[in-house]
Length: 305
Length: 250
Image (cartoon, rainbow over all chains, first blue to last red; front, side, top):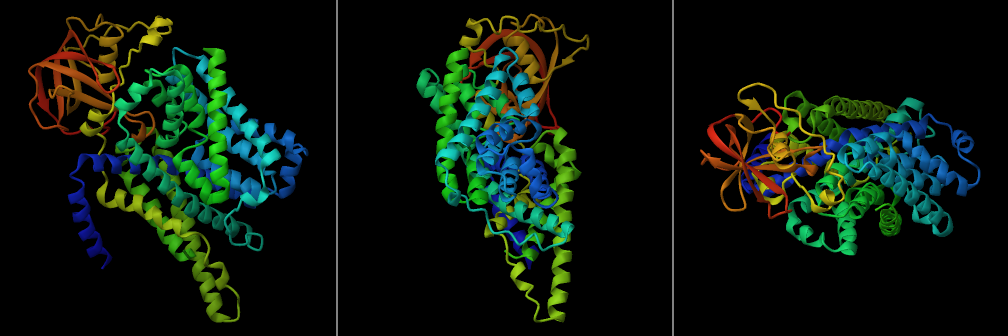
């Protein structure tokens, strides 16, 4: 029965795929998923370890007692997580569950995918003629993460974050709890990753590049255009530097905005954040982060270039 | 979505990832270096699914033995979003969409951007001079290497040499066929084409046909209307159709 269905579907889909644009869409969609899977699984396993094996008391000892001080410590700690943004969403969710103050967990969430060594190395390789881009990217990203953390302390409300119901891990034996946490996060974050990957593939196929070319000549508009493009394209933070380098008709400041916004706000991230932290959180967090990231990137760009 | 359904989705998804790494299918989507991580992730997905099934069967046996046990409350966790994971799974297993090709090359601007502002502030000025070509005849170059030597190196290292390029045929802005290849830095979402214009014995074959072509550098460039980048040319002496290479990207 299933085989027949699959056979029929196969022919139907095969017929549809004659259109080259649809084919490109499917290729980009599948490739965003394939590329994200190792990072998703890695992040999920790490977050399950945090949820099950790291005692709550560890975070109380590791982070400064005062939330305003915990934010920079958590932000800088993002340096040690070698991965891209798909992995850091479940990890930040797990940190909040384990009693880490949300402001610090959010600073970590924003900083980790942008300032880890792999991403900064990729940036250096992509911009051989502009080594200052590495410092500008790392510095601007860290600043945005800290600002958002502190902003959350002032304005954030705990009830905006609604972590999805997870089967009571506390009553289970440790290994069983570990696998249950893994399964739950993979299914949940993975499902929302699919939504984001579909959106990213659509943008990739639908946005005409000539249009961007015409925007490049206007300084303010070009910064906004590339920041918006970073949101829509949803490229992995380990690869976005190469794309930014290829957008060379744009000013370096505009490309810095692309690199700062991309790992913090993009379609697949917003989708995953809505899934992991709740929709009320995502509709506030993403726009605030976007505005702040654009402002900080523009300011840093003006100082350097 | 109950635990059993989640396990089934994870088995299929992990299995599809593993299946793609068994041959060269995964190379259509990501770089070769990601393979060990893909295998590890696939194995972990399958392992998590197996553990979930084991726990499911154990709990079912327990609840049927003791009907009073309040075990059923634990089964219905997780959102329906997980079903979406079947989409990439089915696409990978049954369609395995082809690598990016002429469609992307036609819509995206070439990678050989020699932008004015970078030339002005001199940051390109110390761009490493290209080492001389190896003595092979014809010498095999990637499209990116040929294009960079032609555009940034002004063709100095290419003069009087027979050069062999491998790429697919894509329609150029003027309707003439181009030789193109996609550069990947991470996954197909960031694929950027390199385009080389053709003179001489131009292959008149359908788009997306892979060819291996040999020819000489000529001092001619065109402007890619998509992003204003340069399209260097080559004058072809011979060419032949070939099967698509294992790794379709540069």
